[in-house]
Image (cartoon, rainbow, N blue to C red):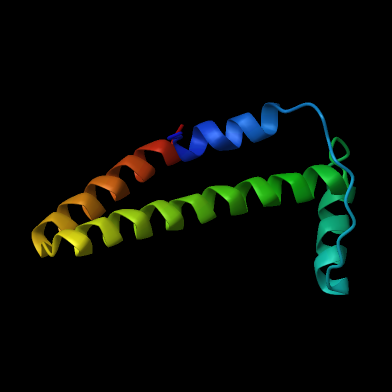
Length: 99
């Protein structure tokens, strides 16, 4: 199944069922999150961590997609095709950032 990054992140966000997890983070990171939450009454720690994971997921998928297309071009042994697909993918991702 092929998804654009924004579609996958939207699907993850729209899933109303939440799973409870435990994570260990550095004291500095937790202080930064708590400071941000205290300045934004409508947010919770969970909301901040969920948003961070959504951003990570999007970045991870961008890297995965770029690597996939790069490998496909290498399999074809065609540097021109590699440049074309890499630039096309960048244009698509950059256009989605503004959405």
